[in-house]
Every structure is written in C-alpha cells, then in structure tokens.
Image (cartoon, rainbow, N blue to C red; front, side, top):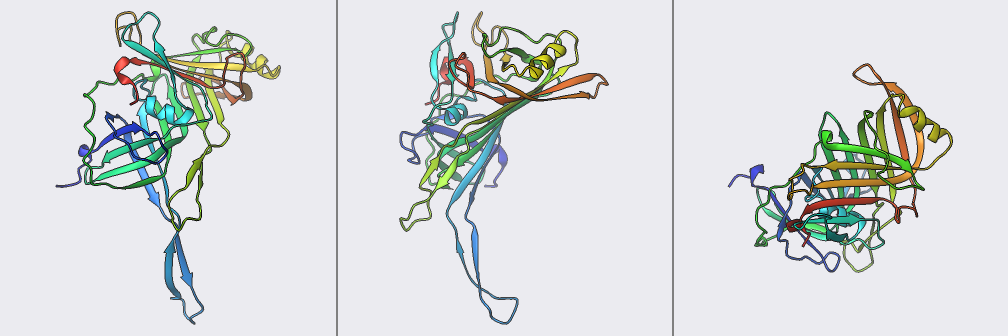
Length: 331
C-alpha cells in the first residue's frame, strides 16, 4: 500500500495522567498536521591528524513538537483550547436545547491528550500532547485561521489497533466575513461597543512558554512539561474613519486600558432554530503601538497593537467561548 496522504486520520482522547496513553474515540478535522521527534546528534571528534576525525556519535534526549491548523471552527477547537488554557466550563446555550457553550480561561493545570495518527503509511501515537501556542489571524476578505503549536512527551510507531472512533460529523467553519469586533474600556462590559464600518483584519497570539524537563533515570525520555507565564498579544487594523479611529487614538494617548472582543458568528440555524454557532475571544490589555498606513485599496488605516493585561472586571484574563453542538464534547 502506498503512503497516500488521503489515508491520513487523527483521533484524540483526554489523558488522566500526563504521557499515559488513552483510547482516542474522537476524530478531529485539522489541516497539515505535523509531529516531529528529534534527538540532537552529538558527534565525538578526536585529534587524529586529519579532517575525518569523527569516531563516534551519541544522541541527546527525545524532544517532540508539532503543529495543527484549521479554519476557525468552534467544535473543532475544543481539544486544542483545553490543552492550551485548561478545562472548560460547559453550560447549555441560552435559548438552545442542543447547543453547549464551552468557556476557557487560563488555568494553572493544563490537561494533556493522546493522539492516534494514521499518516497514510503507518500508525503512530503521540502521548502527553499539550498546546504551547495559538495564533489566530483573519481578515474580512480572507480565511480565518487558527494555528496551534504542540509539545508532546513521545511520538512513536504503534501497532494499534486504532480506537473505534465516534460517528462522522459535519464541522462548521467561520470565515473572516463572519466577524464582528468590539472595543471597550477594561472597567466596562466587554462586547458593548461594536466597531461599525471599520474593522479590516485581526490577529491574536498566545503562548504558554512550555519547557521540557529531564531527570537522571538512565533514560532519554522526557520527564515532564513545565508551564510558564502566559504571553498574549493582539492586533487589529481599522479603516481611518472619523467615527472610530480618532477616539481610539485618544484612548491610546491617555493610556486607557481596553478590552478587545473578536466574535465569529455562524448562521442562525447552524445548530438549531434561533441558536447560532459562535466563537469569541476577549483580550484585555493596553494599546502598545499605533501605526498609520495606507492599505492595498489606497485608503488610510490604523494598526493597533494590544498587550495583554489581567482584568478583574472581566473576572479573568483571556476568555475564549465556543458554542457548539452537544455532540462536540471532548472525550
């Protein structure tokens, strides 16, 4: 059998103990998945009177990383967000009976997952998978992309058999044109003041600053992943409209802390009558820089860069919400 890429499949399951594999019943829909297992070469060279003086080589500790990408999809983001920020609070959506809202805020304990993968040629299994960073980028006229950078304990060929997966799903995706932006003071209520006729594109970058630890146990295996401080930045490009940008520049000059909400909404019947599928990002912070430029359309724009701050008014720092079908729960 040839190793055709169309054969590829990824399934995931939440681990109870970091690095201990579990069954993976939920198939995930991602683009261009990548896992890398590296061991640094350590050449041993000696003074032998010639340039061909390498006589041995050893290998360093195991380090596994990777990435997955997808268009913004509330139901397909659950596993990756949980292994980035911590377990979600899940409640029924207001006005819905079949939809659930998953709310993520940064926690000190982050779960890991097992990933079963058929890469088209063989079965592989990654254990202790956690998300080190996420990057959101989108614009009105382009796709709305989420990239997740991964760390893991181990990634090796596996004899299987793969876990019997859950029923096939039809995931929903939210393009750039399905976006709204809001800007409010951090002392107020996020999502109150909508940006009308001005938001062009947006970025959000968050990083866990994961680190690898190894211990003296006559093994080159990873001992643990450590979690660092959370770094978050965000940015928006706004049309230079008299209704929005002068006031926002004044907020920047006055060093007024702001909270940016990015909201992506699906069709009204995306899950059930009267209940939209949605994904929102609330990022509290202070404007760091403002750049005044011209865009491709020959009009003036402002680029605002936001540095993350914890907000007691929001009850948390970064807040991510996903409204999904009930069947989308991470197992």
